[in-house]
Amino acid sequence: MTTPAIRPACPADIAAIRAIYAHAVLHGTASWELEPPTETEMLRRFETILAGGYPYLVAEGEGELLGYAYAGAYRPRPAYRATVENSIYVAPTAQGRGVGGLLLDALINACAECGFRQMIAVIGDGTGASVGSRRLHEKAGFRLIGVAEKVGFKQGRWLDQMLMQKELGEGDRSPPAF
Image (cartoon, rainbow, N blue to C red):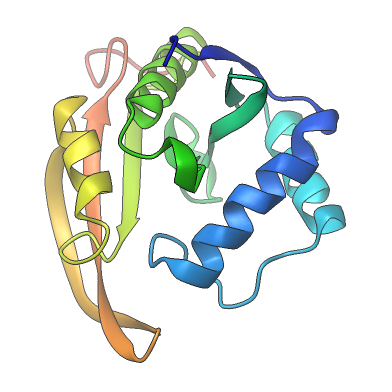
């Protein structure tokens, strides 16, 4: 496999993004949605992320979209404005090939360049089926900050939610610029 190109997502990517996400919703525990959103809803979410000044990236290779990643507000209250939450989804055919790591590294850099200071990964089932996501974040320098046990129910079982954190840029060594 050649190294995928990482680039900003655009509206033309939404159909492929939706397909990747729909598979994750239906077959995985990373997302706790139970029904895949429509393409229209995915476009609305994409536009909201961009309007908020957050990065939204895709990995492209071998003539197809291999995955996507974006950051959004960690929480809506103003005091959280320098903290983002990340999301990464990789197409089933591209999993285990380094695409997630490329996307996460690019997203971390993009968020630091935007002036964000902390990134939170909210990993659904991070102690079970989504162990790959936990390892991906550990490799990128995230540290475990907590586990909420048995807070979601999907696919006939209770799921834990893991929180991981990584400092970006100057972190807490100075106030944010915004």
